[in-house]
Structure formats: C-alpha cells, structure tokens
Amino acid sequence: MKLVLPSAVFAAAFTLASTANEVKSTVRFSNNDRLSGSLESLTTERLIWKSPILERPTPFFLKDILDLTLTGEQPESTSKHEAAITLTRGEVVRGQLASVSDEAVELDTWFAGRMKFNRLNIAGIKISERPDFIYRGPTGLAGWTQSGDKPAWTFQNSRFRSVAAGSIARKVDLPDECSIAFNAAWRGSFGLKLVFFSDDLASDRPSSGYELTIQSRSVYLRGCKTQKFLGHTASAVTLQENEKAHIEVRASLKSGKICLFLDGQIIDVWTDPDVAPNEVGRGIHFITQNDSPVQISDIGVSAWDGEVDQLPAPRAMGGLRGFGIQGLMEMEDESEPAPEEKTNSRRIELRNGDSIDGEVVSIIDGAITIKTPFRDVRLPVEALRSVALKPVDLETTKRENGDVRAWFSDGSWIIFRLEGVGEGTLTGYNQSFGTAVFKIAAFNRIEFNIYDPETEDIRMASGW
Image (tube, rainbow, N blue to C red; front, top):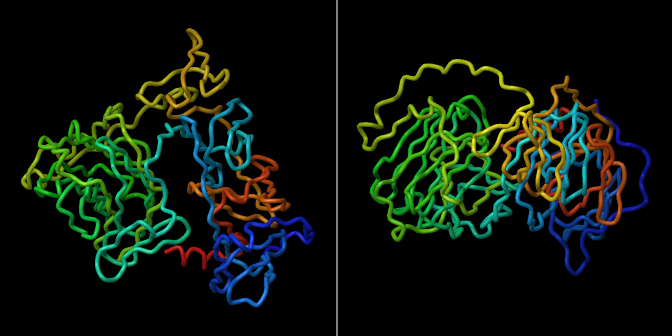
C-alpha cells in the first residue's frame, strides 16, 4: 500500500539555477527511467523539470518519482573536529558538537544551523579530528584513471561501484605522512586492493608504492616494487561479519610505519624497514579482482602527523609481524579474548586511548569542560573520541506521510517529512529534531516514497 503525500501544495518554490548557468541533475522515476536536466522548482507534491528533450519545463508528481540526484557541495570548514550523531533509524548527521545534556545533544551544522536532537532518539556519538583534506570525494569520474580497455568502475550517487575486475586511480599528491580513509560496501565476501604512493595510474599493477590486499577478514601488505610481504593480519573480523566498513590507512615515508584502522579501531601496525621516500609516486588505486560488486564512497585524503596514538588489541597483534612468504603461510590460530567488563556508562573516551569519568559541563569555542570526581577538566573537543550519554530506553521515530530520505554531500543522511519549500531551502520535520530548514545545496540526493516496498526494491537493486 502506497502512502499518500500531504495534499496541500505550497506555492513557494525555489529556483536552483538560472537558464544561463544550469546545474545538471537527474530525476529517476518509479519505473527506473532516468531523465537528465535541471530542477526548476519543487513543491511538496510535484517538481518541475527542465531537459533538452522536453519542449518546455514539465511538472511531475512526487508519487511517481524514485529519487532526485543533485550536485550538492560541502563548503570549506575551519572547525577542528567533526561529531557524527547516529539516530535510532540509522541516520547519520555530522556537525560540530555544541552542547550535551541528559535530555538532548546539539550540533552546529553548515546545512541547517544549530540542530537539537532528543536523547531518546540518539544511538551514539563519535567525534573525530577534522583534517585539512587534500582530496575529498568522489564527485564524479573526472580526474580518475581506469585500467584496461573497458571501464571497471561507474559513478552514481556520490560513490564508485565496480562492475568488473580493474583499477580506478587518481593522483592526489600524497604527503610523506598521510591518511587515506573511505567507506566500503560489498556483497558476500569482501575483496579489494588499495594501492598508495603509486606512480603509474594506468596500471592495476603499479611498480611503486604499497599494496594492501583485503580478502574477507585477512589483510596483506607488500611493497609494489620489491613484491616483498611486509605483514599480514587475520583480525579484520568486522569485514567478515558485515558488508560495510569505514577503512583508514595511515602511512609514513619517514618512519616506514603503516597503520590499518577499521571503523575507528586500529587493527595492526606494520613497518617497512627499507622505506625509500624518493622512489614512490603520489597516487592511489582502488582495485577489484573479480565481478563481485564493491562500492567506495566518502574518500578523504589528508596529512598525518606520523604519531601512532593507539595500540592494536592483543588479537590483532597476533597477525603476521615478520616478513617473507614463509611467514605469510603461518595462519594464526587465535583463541577468542575474554569478554571485557562493562565500563562506566558515563566515561568519556579520549583520542589517545585514555578515558575520563565525568559529565559534560559546557562546550564553548571548541573546548569542552568535563566535571570529574576530582576537578573540572577542559579539553579541545577534537581530543575526544566519544561522549557517553545518559543510559535511556531508546525510541525509534515514527514514520510520517511525506517522509523523504535526503543524502548530504559528505555521505551522511537524514529522514524528514517534507513540509515546505522556500528560496533555496527545504523545511522538514522529524521527531528526533523537530522542524529544521535545510539548504538545498547541501543535498546530492533526495529519495521519495521511501516506505513503498516496490519502490524500495527498485532502489536497493539499482544500488548494486
């Protein structure tokens, strides 16, 4: 049964682009047909679409539309941290932490100003340092080089998707000490190679840099020039148990250290004893070796200070630490670690691995004050990894007629009931944050009819 959008049509609409400077977008219909062009206006019931193959701007009802792809862009930010709130329906909203209390958490966002989220609808908060990105994307295939005669990668909805074996590569001017982070999604067993410090973008077997090979829960590292194995771990369990992960590799041409992180947790650290900074390139590759689809999104390349501020858990240290093919064949037989005791639910985790038992007093100008049993402690927000919230019985927000699923240009997303349209803005309501006014330029995709099973089936199938 299809849900019906609100009957009231708002007269106000926003113009996305002038005739002289149109932003190219794509509208996709419920039969999976696509029509490229530009969005002229939008109301809560219909949109008006301009396209070279249409004689004039044409209206379409939202009930017949699957999604709308836009060219949203994220502005530059001088903030030193980024907080990601995960809501009980899985939505992820990013911004700068403004306040924390037992009842609510506030974020300062670039797309809707300050947003206040109900504690009952917050599943968790993660805080990360916000680096100065050398590259962030993908925003398209432009600037990327594919190996072979037939492209193995496509681009849609701010992500790369593999359709065959092959490499997609880009020169990103990697600094000597760098971080390469991205989100990966897959079906079945995960297989992917990440090559970094490459000097041959057209090849799927470059002769410089390092090759990190992921095969299910096992990860292998070797030098591309010497083909020498530098390390192995079979402790990437999350890659075997799930079909998505946030992967980060930190590498230093000064110390030779290479660190692997999965979902924010360090898995292993390896060292190249023969590191040679002058013999590498500055490119990265994503390489698939079979037809099993892989999606890559939210790529962020930045400088790294070279400091290893976390240590792998004991089970991760059980991976191969030596060199050579002989060591590679020695698969570890690790026993499961004993369950950890539950920590104090009010502890605040720091980025260096320490934790503080206390409550948040205030957040002012990027600094957080924490009340501890001994004294108040003041720290920069970026020094935190997470904030422990008051334990509550979580509530899932209600589904509303007219709900849309909107994706931001940074890969995060949110659900809200479309209530109004203004000049360059959308007004939406969600039980977790109330009413908010969003900048339309913040979105790169808006999905309609999200509770219609047939529509969702089409959307899910086309995503792979």
